[in-house]
Length: 74
Image (cartoon, rainbow, N blue to C red; front, side, top):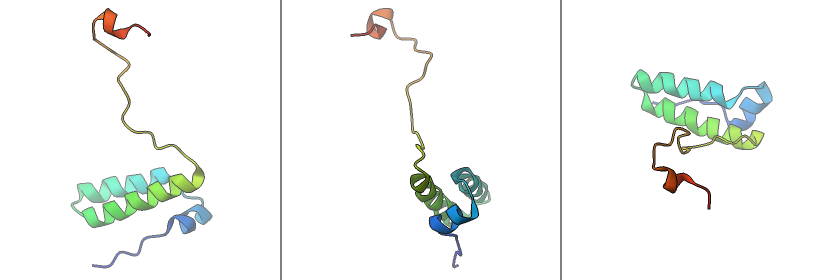
């Protein structure tokens, strides 16, 4: 199966956002089409990089239940 996916540069020219491609990826992965989902995620990451957006990542939870002595600032 061949996938005809836009490039990040083409998506940028059309005014698309990374969230559009992440939505496409999520939908296709739910439907069992992981190949299209991975391609869409790749384009979304490239597009975010072109736009200078921070995709974030995993961050520490704000509701920290550790003992107070472990939480205080250095």
